[in-house]
Amino acid sequence: MFTSQTSSFQDSIDVEEKDDFESEEIAAYGQKTQLNCYYAIYLYEGTRSEATEENVAWNQRRADSTTSQEDFSLTLIDSSLPAEAEPELRTYISRRLSKGALLGGMGNIATVELSLPEQAVGCYCCLLEQERSPEQPDADGNGHVICFLGGSEKGLNLYRLELDKYVQGLRSSLQTPELQNLETELRPYLSRWYEESVMHIHRVVQLVQSNISFLLHAALSHHHVEVTNADDRTKTDVSRFIKAASLQGLSQQDTTAASLCKAMSEDVHSHLTVDCSDTPPTFANTVSNRFCDDWSQAFLNAAERANPFLLRQILENFKLKAIQDMNSLKRFVRQAEMSHYALFRCCQFLQGCGNGDVLLQNARSEHSDLPEACRIIAVLEEFLREQSQA
Image (cartoon, rainbow, N blue to C red; front, side):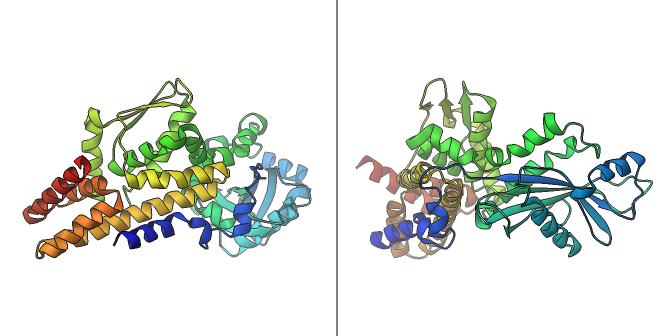
């Protein structure tokens, strides 16, 4: 039994051997080279919309940077792409728009081949439409198309939610077609897309190193994490890491997970404290287990290779393994209500998985209204306590 569980864990943790990332993608990070990443932003206009005199004059000044289709035009505002690659990207986006493949506010990720050193790169595109006025609800929509390029399609897909949220942060900066804040606000924001949307997990692992197991355990256990003596960016990074590693919203019992999270947040004794006044940071109220300790090494290895996409894939596999173990425990508990042998198998499973405390904590909350299941869980908790004292 323990051999099969060890093999299953190794299969989960060795994402390098899976199809999620080809070996050549991973090898690109072997020398810790900075990934080349680019951005581009375009003005999207429906040609049947009424245009102001200022818009017309501005478009005339950018005539060489405009691609027109039957019912819309796409005008370059700014880009960090090489001069030969930008028109290729604009042509690609125009084709996507003409096919209706870019929906307002929803990012689209694909592989594009451009005149770049990488040739083929992952491309995230999102159309941000301007809000239509009540006076003209049926007017053709104008807006902006934002593109982020770098890494691979598979890699960017792992950070789709972060990229969607980052693009939405541009809305307040896209007030006028002239974009007078291009130099002071818009361009710096676009230039930071990779650092802000992709690299936060890598920064957290680099910051806490082997103590990452404490953060993993806190995320699974719904414990509150307090970061002190740190700048706002570090606090935000840790908060985003905890949210990304949490199972809340993924399990079938979301209500149970939410109530458990609330109960744990009210228990000040369960708060994990990270003091960043020293390097590396010091931790207080630390709790971990063998499951989180084993996975922490995989995070450290990926961080050493400076590969944020592999780090995110490991994080997703970590959560998937935890969910699979939770489902296995639920099945064993149901069987144990009718079979002493199933109870024995349940004890073996908890001893072998290394995550028994977290699994039983979630099971206790989920089965709180089932007396027989609660008795089974109480027996299992006593078994784990005896094993820890032995």
